[in-house]
Length: 243
Ligand SMILES: [Zn+2]
Image (cartoon, rainbow, N blue to C red; front, side, top):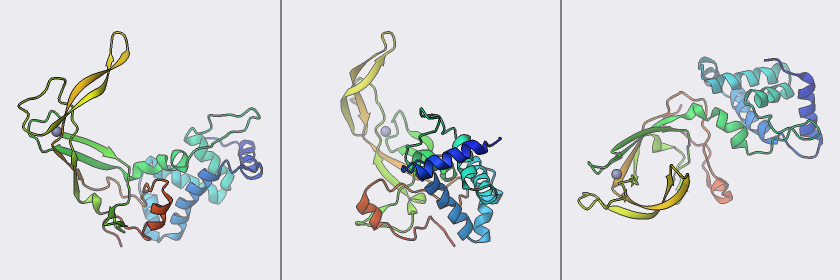
């Protein structure tokens, strides 16, 4: 890809002199990764070098551009490569007013993908086993304090199943069920949504999380926007086994 130096300059000016930190979220997010990369050990840096995941290739290119051609070029590469320059303003500049999660973290979260397996404890549940993946990680609170280890990667947890059992009452269903009389359903012919009655499995569902699929150099944990919970977070926070 060819980078346009004029465009890079414009973005830089727009970000730093207009009084509005338009590029702030991009810079903050990318600097976090760059700092980790530079401050870590050689072994840690190797995690960035050996893996061919797209997210790591993207970060390596950003680091290289930042060091060799300046931060404006690194930032422009990030914005164009991730197709973030879509909203051109009247003056030909771009506005990127989004959260750091939307314009930085979501592109690297694939590094922390983990498999999830849901098993319903009711043997006749129509969705006995469901498998999916997730990349959302949240710190865990136990007896009002946050654990400094994300141990949920090796433990199971329980919730209610919630599978749809259909519109007829399943009178001989062996587990608990509930009635949902406001289930939205779409009529395919007239394409209108109406509310239907559905019965929902309320048996215990066990969620198994095994481990991260990739050997990620970092994880991005979601701490929401709750100021008090951010202050309570442990430092450092470990993920499973660590050195
Ligand atoms: Zn179920």
